[in-house]
Structures are given as C-alpha cells and as structure tokens.
View (cartoon, rainbow, N blue to C red):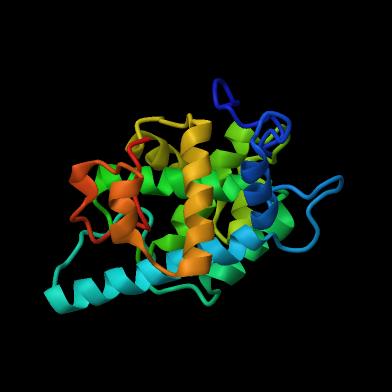
Length: 228
C-alpha cells in the first residue's frame, strides 16, 4: 500500500517548493509543516479535525435520537463509547504512532469515502475504531516509514487481530481508493481553516466545493464530501 501517484511528498508532508505562497501559509498555519524544523508539540490540525468530528458525532446522534432510526452495528461499532475524547485519542495516536500531520487529513478523506459508500453515520460508538483504522491505512500509504499493525493496534487500544479485520473491511468499503489528489487535499485544508475562523459552514461549501448532489441532503457527512 505504498504511495503510488498521490501528489503529496513521500514523507507525508506537502511539497512547499511547488505550492503557492497562500497554500504554503495554509499548510504552516495547520501545522502540517514548520519552516526549517520539525513540527513541535501537537499540530493545530489535530484540534481542528477533532472539533469538526465532535460536532459531526453530536449532530448524527441527535438526528438518530429524534428520528428514532436504528442503524445496524458494523465491525467498527463498540458496545460503549471509549473513555478518551476524540481529541485525546488523536493526540495519543500522533504522539506514539509517528504519523505525519498530513496523515490525519488523509484519514479524514478516507473516512468521508467510507461514510459515502456505506451510509454509516459517525457516532461515539464507531469514531475511534474508524480513526485508528483510517490513520493506519494513511500512514502506510503516504509516510515514508511506518510501523506494523501490532504497534498501531497497541496505540489504538485494540488487538492486532481486530485491527487486521478492521483494516481489510475498511479497504474494501472504500474500494481501495487511496489516491488523494493535491487539489482535494488542499480543499480539505482550506475547509479546516475556514471552519476555525468562520465556524461551521457546510451548506455554503456545498456549492463552492462542487460537492456531488448525492451528498447535499446527507446529514451523516463528517463536514462535507467532495467528489474526490
């Protein structure tokens, strides 16, 4: 699952030399890369992503409660929500896994593809397993060095055999669509920055990002789903 034709660099970081000044500023703002040195502490992208995912989970669970809909549990569902918040879980993964900050955006794109293909809303019962699975896949695809599943399973708090099953199910669920164009990557980055400065604005982005019409009425989208 090594990187093939994705336009991110092989080290999991965006190419600063070929990016426009505005795009470079965006990447630096999100903590995807610091000028002349490695990222220190937790990159800002973790806070923004976890906040967006928190809002999505809360919204989905309210909708499920008010509509009294019952979704069939998947292999990613747990019996009860984990003790760690989404942000704490993402920070744990970043701290111990060695994933590049860009991996978290790639993982978000993969989760959007999963939600689109399987029509499974993100909830507190499945978000943690989806995170560790999508991040494991992303790290293998875009990072130059990565660990084996036994290590990622330990970081994520699941068994190796379970992560192996989750990874295989996830890959088939997204039809092994792992390539992410630089255009899609940049749009997700831009969306995160706009979410931070202007608050949730999904309806406005439905037109501006040319999202496919099949997504315009889906309430279980993480933030938006670009036709990528």
